[in-house]
Length: 362
Ligand code: SF4
Image (tube, rainbow, N blue to C red; front, side, top):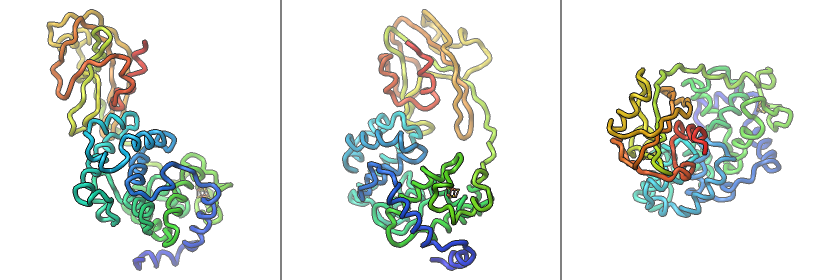
């Protein structure tokens, strides 16, 4: 352990082995049974870790099993077309994960003979694998004492040490990683890693934590100071610019037009309804122009609106049902196709346009 961490340990209010002993005892009786818990196969562990980034366990279980059914090996995933991977990911959101998953599978097959590397540096060189995910793979698949700092662990540590600074600040980040490293034991790393994630997911939850049943209650600084509900400190919300869009449910007979976005760039490879930036002109005027000007529009109805916030802008969408006589192509980048309306729920629409589906009705 580096000296800086040893010096820090002098001022700690408990010894790391005490914490891991309490946590492991609790995990033995209260840990979750999850489909990826029993395996030491790095492919399966990596898949679960990627799916669990920004998605709840409850939502992931079914996708994980379905995904493994389609791609039982890393080689099968690497050989599949990217579109198939994205379509299988439909509904999980944060689709960059699906693209990175595919790219990483291809890299591991090409550069590591299909076997995941076991060093942090090599793992972190793969697309979509950051320091925490690399730590989780090394700890869970290869039993290495590598720390993790996912959202659950971050919350537990912020409270355990009563960290009273924004947890994403550079200084806080350094402290959190140092604490995580110092706490990770050299033995039973697999169980410890699962245990601390479970504690954050089941007991030290983000709303009101269940301190009365927490195995670390006696060690917890936030509890001693009465700060459990205030920590971690919340991030101030950033104001983002607003964009307005018109999206069209362009219907001919029982089908509607959808397009797949180009594979690279924002929301690459995902499906969406035809759309364009809104202006102050009325929809009844601009929609026929967008459709080429010559198309006879049989019916045009506003179905409703939706709002979606990305990290750097917010989008307000007005969604129109536009009926036309025949299935004509619209000048759009990406792949357009006509799809039976009843198949829309299965399509890998991006999040903003997924919000439009309930507006369609019958
Ligand atoms: S005592 Fe409460 S706040 Fe502290 S680690 Fe346990 S659940 Fe979290």
